[in-house]
Image (cartoon, rainbow over all chains, first blue to last red; front, side):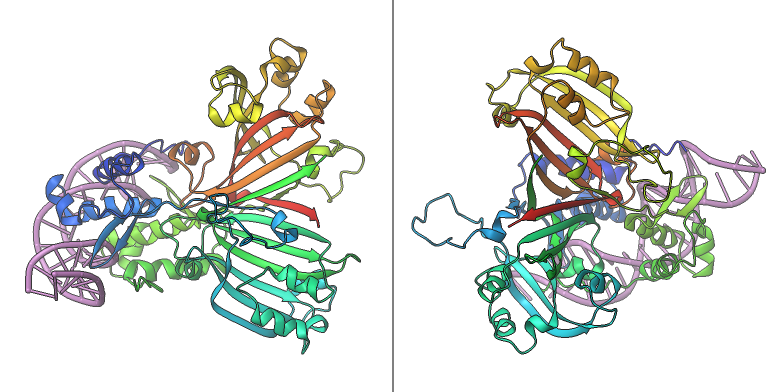
Length: 256
Length: 256
DNA sequence: CAGTGGTCTAGACCACAGC
DNA sequence: CTGTGGTCTAGACCACTGG
């Protein structure tokens, strides 16, 4: 029961602590190359394995990234981009007039990387959302969204097939992805969402997510399940988004 | 640039993969003791260190927990408790009539463990929220909330001192914590919140959080900054909550 | 090519759990 | 007391980077 483990000691932890302090204090700027395994080995009079473990601890913390064959580098710390439901209703007048400081990088993630679309059978959860029988066909789109040039979010979206199959809306969604939010495309085709519910959870990434989102060490993902409904309450869109958790900030307001 | 690392091989990874499959497939029930380091060593003809690393990978994944001197055990997977802003306005009629299945464990976390209260000087962010000069005194409460007997959430709450200092409200908040949400206590004293904004972010826990919340491996925390405002728009409460991220699910609805 | 991180080995010592 | 996980050592091989 006494499972304490307050603060583990050990040579590897000590070496890591020294570097960790230097990084968080800013003495080692992002992008700087850390001492190599062999340098740490002689500096601290430890075995190679121990020095390697010390750097491994920093990588696991997300403070550093290892590039085999090159070195271990201080990881740049990205600012968190706020995401709020306002972005669903706000018209994208981003590039309006002034190129001033108020809008440096507050553009939501846009599609890039792979994209795909297909018709797939609905599993139980999805079928319930759309009030369809299990196994009924649904229209599915997948995308990898990027922000500031880096992968930011995996996206799987589902639609009712009768809304999309062979319609202009489907083509519009295909050719979009770079410019405007899917909600704007839906609205332009007479399917404006009237309400959105979002469920958020945080967890460790899978191996696939870790590589696709370029996550380091123990950085978590934020998994968001979003359901958009029309004025009649029927589901228009079901989206499952897996964000690189360290790059965003989710903001919600509620009147009591 | 080609930083792929699709799926790392290595003996330790292979051994871990076998156990991981057995766990996720349910062949190894939660609570089961995994093979010991020395058993794995002879079973797979590897060095002790390698077998130890294999178990370490499972612990890092949150699939297992190591109890030194005893063994390594399959970690119980907790259900996620949904949290939605509804809980702020819902009257706590939990123990009303039927003890049926609809309300088994959907009670929000309640205070337990340490609690504290003091007056502290406001730092810049807090001062801005309360429209006070930096360094002005604010009333601060800390608590460790538990759910189903396990630590669930660290809580730091701030209030304007004139609302609390030496009032019945302060005493009520002190003596509460077990029964009702702080908002109900505030409302009972004429300070009913009219709007709430919440900012959520996910990150790796600090060492202190990892021990206080009994987090295993790479399990992330969800950090929530909540600001409750009265009808005049002035901040009534500022709360910073750090949840054990794997045990909850945050739910929000929004009308467009 | 020399230097990098990643991994494995065989052996050792420690602190702790539980009988 | 035996078995447990945790850690360190000294040495080795590998695949890779980058001049």
